[in-house]
Amino acid sequence: LSFNTRHPILLPRSHAFTELVVRRTHSHVLHSGVKDTLTELQSRFWIPGRLSLVWYFIHWCVICRRHSASYYHPPPPPPLPAY
Image (cartoon, rainbow, N blue to C red; front, side, top):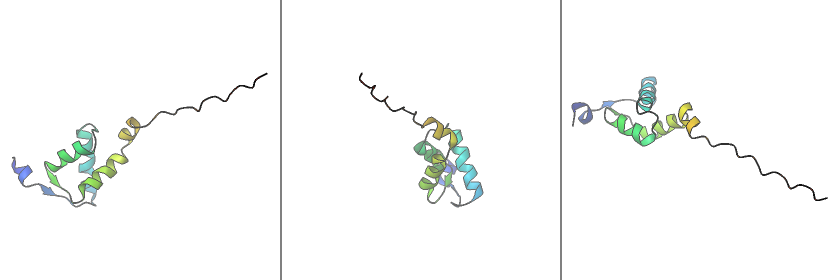
């Protein structure tokens, strides 16, 4: 294991720098999801409550929301009147 993995940098949960690190890491792993973002973060940083923090940022990520959006399915047409 590398030195950074054995001795991670402690970051406070509610700080602007922590937010930037999480966003950069999420972009660095190409918006792959919570698991990959956490794995990459844990290799260098220790953030208390990191699971909920990463989930929050991924939930509000515009690119991730766009890719996980479902298409609009129009309702079936009403029956035609019988003459």
